[in-house]
Length: 248
Image (cartoon, rainbow, N blue to C red; front, side, top):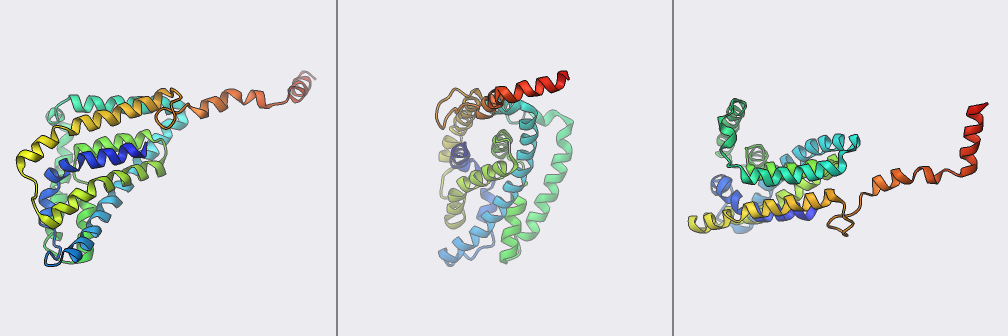
């Protein structure tokens, strides 16, 4: 399932150019040297990946709670369906609800902090810019977090988000080094393909939850199989002794 994180990152990186591109274009890197600018951009990406991994750790922990509650298959199916449903509904659907207002206030503070560090030319500033950038609202990140939750483990959730972030990095690095190298019409055409990537990842999670016995794609739920066979592991003689003691 980590492959789905990479696919989502690579396919959605064109969306990232539209959302995070303006930040990438004005990063305080030394553009007089492509090598130096490339190395400095790594610090920016490390900041983003750190944020994504921390958030993935949290959502993976939530997924683990659901996993321990016995919802390991259902959570994968539910997260896949949620991904597909999120593509169907328009992005501005939730803006009419009041619970988004605190989010807008937080985003305003983040942008203010970003503006401060964008004027500082230091390696620390580049890392902090990436770290803060990772907290900015993004529909694609939300989709990745759904996947991290479905992993059912905090470490796997963090790794899922880390791989997703890696997938978005190459194209963003190109934006940092070359500027706005994609025309608006090309970006719009590519953005139309992103929902299909999200649906594909959603289908993969649904197949994973169905446990159809397909290697790598929909493996059987081994945990449930073990639980069913636990009783068969107890020798019949021992079980009879236990019953005799309980009668006495």
